Length: 427
Image (cartoon, rainbow, N blue to C red; front, side, top):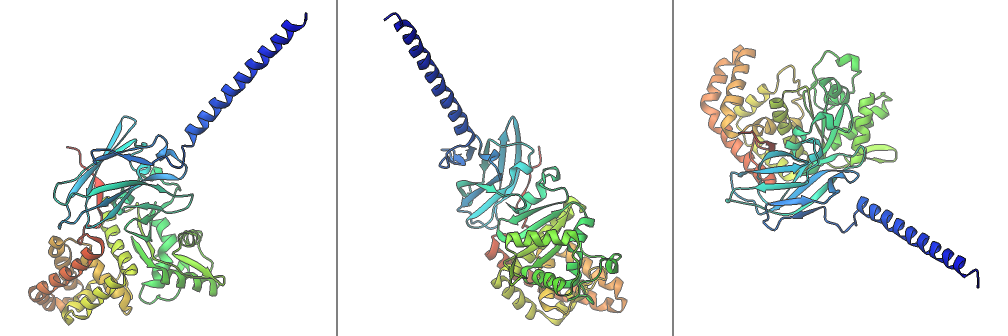
């Protein structure tokens, strides 16, 4: 009986240790729960007003998450109206202008690469006419080396310092996910990745062959590029068959294309997958980057839409001999060196050089400069060029209108307006 106090003391001590252990476990579980929210937790919660959303506490800092997509329904006016998006977080904000497109759409913004901060909320303001409804907000997830889903305008806005690699960043065009966009740090890097491809696919006198880098070192490739899956597969298959050593940048491109499904392998050989790839460079001015990206995106639509290709072929086959001659002369500039015997390429470029402009720009950007170049380069065709401008301007605009109508049906945008997202100027 004299030992009872000592026993009771041990019991009390054991009880205290047990309580401390339970408290510690609960504390650790609480931290773990905070670090990894339940899978059922929403990525973003829409406001009851329908004009904004708040992101979950760790939504935009979760591994692999780089931004968000707004899923919109109900747009439909022509011409599309322009609204605005405001991203806010950590005492900072960023306002973007967005040109609405027809129908339901996904507006994908890799926000972590644009504003330099982690947004905690996004709000939107759209005009009453054709006002869309945001039905949900989804994350953009991309593993290491995987293309980031993005609106074309967002590609132009991502800061180079936010790229995952030093020399290029890759994206999936949110309107046509099978089309990849590669934004390169310089023309030099872009050349090493795409120049031999351009000669193999598009250059007169070289098409179908892969030149040694030294053989084309002094020749111009392109400041922007576009290639469909079929031609990419032909290039890499030819390199393998002919035992041509690929440049390191060409190998990295091949890996990207295989990972994204643009290429696949069958029996150890490269085969065409889906879509294609387009590319621009940071060496281009901001204005030129926007123009080039719009032009190359039109090629992406041509690659992936049989109905659009058929409409382009119909427009080309129905054009007068004078109009097709004007286009062929316009495209015959020596530094471009297009293989104009390739009807697929010819019609593709004919379409893109038209629809890269707004209708209001055709005279000043295409018809006038094109006729001037023909007069300068082919003095014997001066009278013909002047007659073409007088007599066939109406035909050129009619062809433009027909193709523009197809573009509207396909993507809900008009010529010269494929870039739908931009920084909103401060007042």
